[in-house]
Amino acid sequence: MAVQTVASTTDTANSVDLGPAAALSCRECGHRVPLGPVFACEECFGPLEIAYDFSGYDTEELRKRIEAGPANIWRYAPLLPVPADVATKPNLNPGWTKLVQADNLARELGVTGGLYVKDDSGNPTHSFKDRVVAQALEAARAFGFTTLSCSSTGNLAGAVGAAAARAGFRSCVFIPHDLEQGKIVMAAVYGGELVGIEGNYDDVNRFCSELIGDPAGEGWGFVNVNLRPYYAEGSKTLAYEVCEQLGWRLPDQIVVPIASGSQLTKIDKGLQELIKLGLVEDKPYKIFGAQAEGCSPVSTAYKAGHDVVRPQKPDTIAKSLAIGNPADGPYVLDIARRTGGAVEDVTDAQVVEAIKLLARTEGIFAETAGGVTVGVTKKLIEDGVLDPSLTTVVLNTGDGLKTLDAVAGTGLTATIRPSLESFREAGLV
Image 1: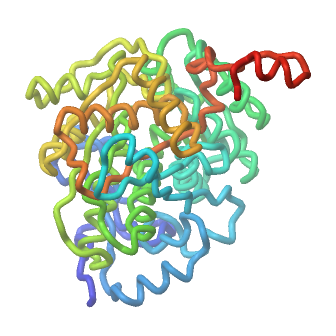
Image 2: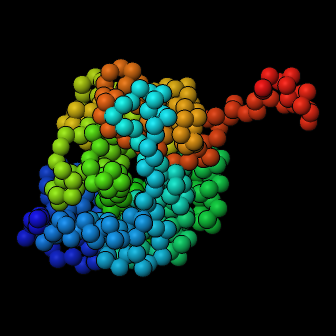
Image 3: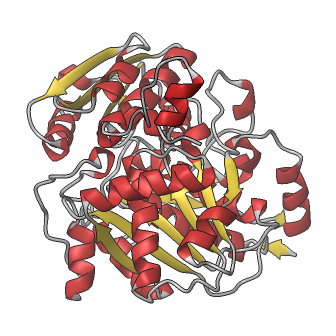
């Protein structure tokens, strides 16, 4: 089966080698521009994303090529904006993380159709951000940047610092000044500059947007600003891996945490690409978005039936999801409604409960974002929104060691003297 998806003949010839990436296309008006470090449409100011030329791909040959590839995201290089020799360059090589069949959790939640946890805590800096940074790094190389930077709620700062160190780039990243100490340490240990900004993530992001337009920012590649179209494509690899690990099948339902909303929209894009390429059978699937109640602008809009997402001031322990003005919020609403999914939120107390539930049943210690997805999954099942008879995948996007404060009350079962008598007195037998 040959796939005929051809780029527009009006596209300017690429000046950089980014594989099948053909142009940047506006998600709002469709205007196309050549590949470059830009993120907003010059015609309508809509967001730009990668448009591909997958023409000439034979489905079975592509499947064989992927399956013979390395055990990381570069097995999908033919579907990503990266050069063909990407696997030979210094990179952290994230991806191909475990898809855990969560039978114990399934029994606890009453899921009978198969429940899986895609555990991205196994990436090099223990979060899914390594995927998106790996993509942005290749774009930074192609465009001649010398400094890698970002605005971050924590995980991205560490991923950028590590990737820059490995690739020989300078790094300078910006975070809210009051992040969890574990994330500050992990971002700082790689030797780059780490700058705290007084304010929340949205304040940090605004500052970075200003820096890009200033001479002080010349030569800087901001992975989630001027390199955002390339960076965002890294999230597609989660969709690719889930389907390949399920035996080239689409999941019936997938629950995704929402910060900016980009991860959810790109997972949907990845699933749609696999369908168009013939790598999976076309069938309905539902995508559910998960937020913490203390920062739930998308779920609030979804429940109210709105198409516009009203910004909120974050107040939640799930700081990696604490983006009060999510750029992809409206697109998340569209996808949830188109696929028959939903967007839901849970309280901080439910987040902590869900972290402990996942740890107790499957031995996976999730950070607060993972507690949000598991907590929302539980709530959706209890409310009759998520069908427990269908194959369901839940994302855990980071390691619980990064958010220890959330479960700080967890500790010793008992303290005893070093004697059998004291052991028995403690009621442990």
